[in-house]
Amino acid sequence: MKRRKRWLLSGFIVMLLFLAVGLFTVSPAGRISSKHEYIISKYYRFEPLSENGIEQWFIPEYNYLDAIELFIANVYEESEGEILLEIENENGKRIFRRSYRASDIAAGEFVKYSIKKNLKEKERYKIRISYTGDTSESDMVPVLMISEKSKNLSETQEAFSNGQELDYNVALTYHYAQKKWFSLS
Image (cartoon, rainbow, N blue to C red; front, side, top):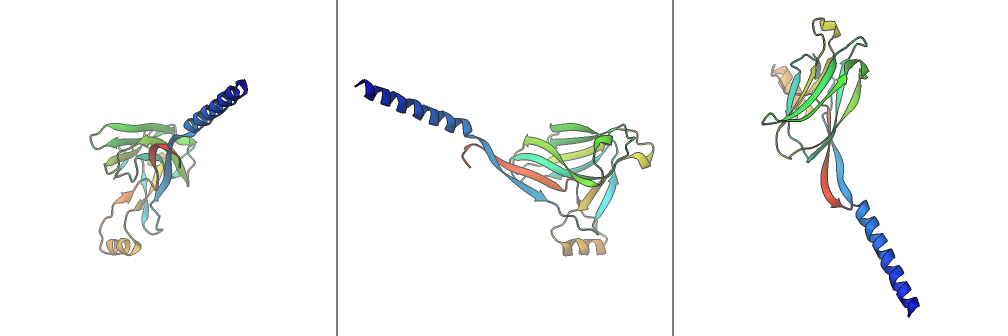
């Protein structure tokens, strides 16, 4: 009889351990998905960053923005200013704001900037990138590469040949995730 109680108690403890481990490993999970804005070599331009910055509206594909990638073409080591990255919702409420020392940014390559913010799908958000340094010398102002936004190459070529101005992409890649609680995937 004692032996049977011991086995039942041992089985109960093992079952509790499995349950605890299972609940501990269940965490917010999500699939990371990237939305790329591919650069067409003829259809991009460089914009100097100023205090007003460069703005773009976007609509998230999923409910979590993990990161964005930017291409800052040139930054001078002597730059004492900061590059400011902000995201606001349609009502002007600031969702995200972070500044980066301009002299610490790797120029001439794609750099991933971590956002890690929950956003509402199908709502519009504004991303703004600006420079908070001395803009009196235009040669010393950081320059951001932006690409023309289009559905396909022929649409872009047609718009350019007709002299139409296209919308542009500030962030070249948005990394989204669909966050779910208690997902085992």
